Image (cartoon, rainbow, N blue to C red; front, side, top):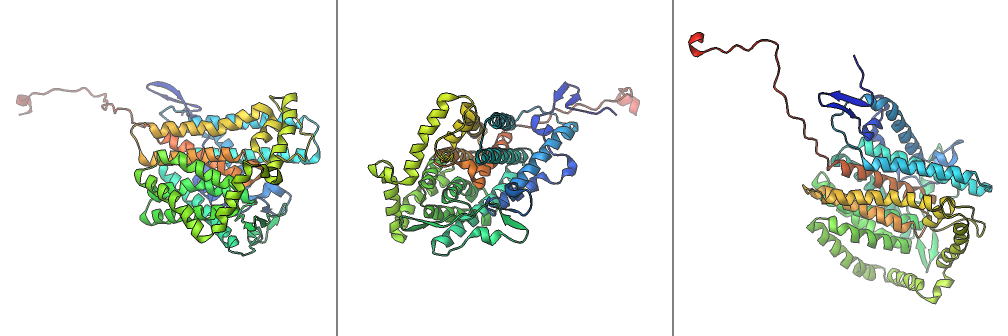
Length: 474
């Protein structure tokens, strides 16, 4: 029996298998969709510093380990999945883009390892490329395992549930409890690879961090998942789940300000402004009502929080910015980055000034990998944004598809904005969350494909057809 390897031969000729089908995990690898759901379920449970005890160190993080396993399954599918028959020839642009990004990341890492780096810089470079590799595995797994919007709903349900856990822990910390979530989840068999995040004060308030490693990561992750919760409040599978999703959106929005993070509020504003054009009329009214009522409720409930944010944002545009370490430190980074860029604009170089830590992921890419890395990360964000916008505008219009596309656009752009205010890849949850959004974009793109089966041919027979008259039958 002839085997179909890489091609499907039929009456219309031969067709190459779609790239996403060649990447599909082998049948014996276990349910890949369940693995994707498991990742979304644990993403916000374990901070990056809580890892499996043993020699893996930071690579023993449950989220990162699942990413590595996902990439392995995808690689096995590349070898063994070619025998899967497929009639329609479609190339998933998101899969192609993710693979190109992985190639660029490995190329930039190879260039960087050829430089003279101290131990800290070399470890940082390796950590970044491993996080990116795990993220690519998650994005590809979602792209090949989640086949439709129903599967995307299940994945989003776990993701939003984790975000509510993150927000809930943050609210408990905001009420005065000195709760360290990293200590809670460090069960037997787990260990700390670094010191867990600590609760610190800012403007006489405790900056909460929930289940994350830093208040900025806490706020950004909540801001990115807020449009997803609003999406589920309209399109979850049952009325109970829709009500729960609406409540989740309220909890997420309520918890975000307690991080005292300008990045979090900026990401919420950007995300909601981008999501509204894709939402249904009822969702638009809900977002508008929330935008009007939230500040009013905040003034009544905790008026000093509003005053604190007014002071924080006023400080950016006034002379007091020099006294704010979070602002002056970021501005001081540009001097060293400019020196590296002047020496090697395309491939980057070694940052010799400062401590080597940049609170700006875009500048980090520019230093370590030059414009090549900057363009690669921008393409990873803007490519799926473009795909989502196109999918949302295609006919026939599907309200669920448009809403999910808008939520993904909001999250991806908000992540790009946040990368300008802190080093996203240094924080595992915010970094891997980006790849979840990229993988879900593949689901949105595939939901626009029509799979009309070819017209059936009349049955053929080798027996002669005998025409008889009515007289002969009698």
